[in-house]
Length: 126
Image (cartoon, rainbow, N blue to C red; front, top):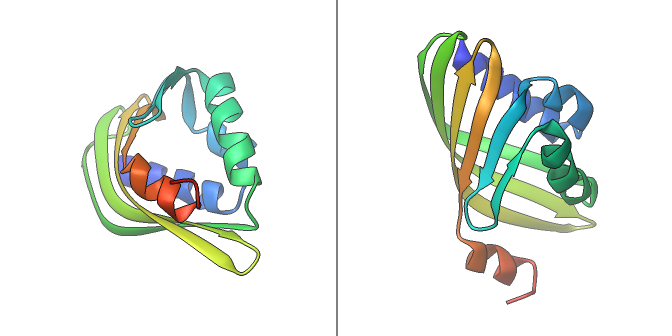
């Protein structure tokens, strides 16, 4: 089911196993990080995510609510979560709303909505 696929993807991100997580994406996947912009394809997703998640000691995405419809052939998943990132003793927490489209067993669209200003303040940049 599409919900289990997205949960597996999140687990791999938390484990900082980016190559394995990318295998769950369609080769031409669209990653729309709404406040930042869109990238297309697993190479570009890796270029965006790799330095970001690799720059933290620990990554945890706490899913508070998740709904899924459809099948692995054609499904949609939405989740409300808090993405947490630890560097040393400091955690940064970011509320996120995510949308995932699954076609033919792979994630074809991943769109995250969050407040960029809140992220910048938490990171000490705003």
